[in-house]
Structure formats: C-alpha cells, structure tokens
Length: 246
Image (tube, rainbow, N blue to C red; front, side, top):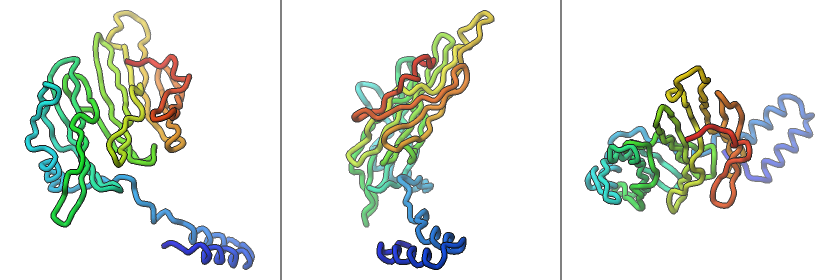
C-alpha cells in the first residue's frame, strides 16, 4: 500500500519522537517497503493456447521468404510488458555455413475481442550459422525497458565461439544496444601439439542500469570488462583488449 507523502512523513517523525528503538526502526522500515508494489518489466506467460493464438495472428503461414531466402518460424515465447504483449518466434533458415537463423519479434495488444498484432519484425535479431535461431532470454536487470539477450554460436577450423547481442524492446520497436559481445571462445580443436588452448567463458552482469553492464570472463583470461553507453549503443572499455573472440 502507498502512503500519502505527508502521512508517511508524520509517521516517521512520530516514531523518531518515541525514542527510535528497534521496534520503531522495524516499523519504519516496514512502512516504507514498496517491494511488493514493483511490477516486473516483462513476465512470461505460461499459456500454450495464448502462444499459439498470438503466433497464428503474426504469421499467416510458418514458412515465409525473407530477402530471397526461405525461413520457417515456430512460436517460442509470449511475454507481458507494460505496453501489451511481445511474441518471440524462432526462424530456421538455409542450411549453409554463412546463413543465419532469426528471432522474430511481434508486439500485440489485448482487446475485448482478443489479441491484435500492432507491429512486427520477422528479421529482428540474427541467429547462428547453418540457419539456426539464436539462443535467447529476456532480461529486466540491464535497462529501463526489457532486453532480449541473444547468443549466436559459430565454429570453423577447430575453433568454437559465441557472441551476444542485447536488444532493448522499446515501444516503437526493438533497438540494438550492444553487438558482438564476446561470450565464449575455444581453439582447442585447432591445436595439434602441446600448446595450451585458449578458452574463455563469460556472463553478462548488470551494473548501472541504462549506463553500464559488466562482462565477467573466466578461463585463459580472467577479468571484468565494462561496457558503457555512448549515444545509442554500448561499447567495450579498454579492458576488452586481449579477450579471445570470433
């Protein structure tokens, strides 16, 4: 429950006047605790029927042509956000080394008659090689709006690697905020002698919301790399030098 500003101030003053003991402090902390009032930036809907309905509205047919290439989409997740609903659909593309899969994003609203698609981007976020869609998750701890963290994997000549992208879900559409963030690397498959392989794994951690995030590396290189916002995008700091990557 929310307290009017004057009532809350008066309550705190009264508790202070009563001696400021442990009981008073606990009462004060309880009075100003608003954690129960916080609304998540994005909440996954575990409703298979709603997911299928949203997908049917977004795609007349699962197989469509995008830039002269055939992609087949499947429903992957439905989330409720402040402005309505967001549908994620995974797109599988051509089976070639240089061909990327996709993650489609559609915005929907809920009306008395049912859901309605308001905007859509079938090629919103690229995926991995051989037409595979990216690994993805929705995060609410990095920016003011929900963020889709996607991971694309690659392999060649015994080297495997992964990169991440952070895409903010703004009301007017997805906005790429951080691109080509190195997350994993290994050249173990390319080594034929006793050379020690380079292997790193990383995780993206929150820092100062909307301003910074941290990529925490471990393995052949162990360090934290801060990515800071410059204009519309985030860029890596100088500590990123020397991180093995694709």
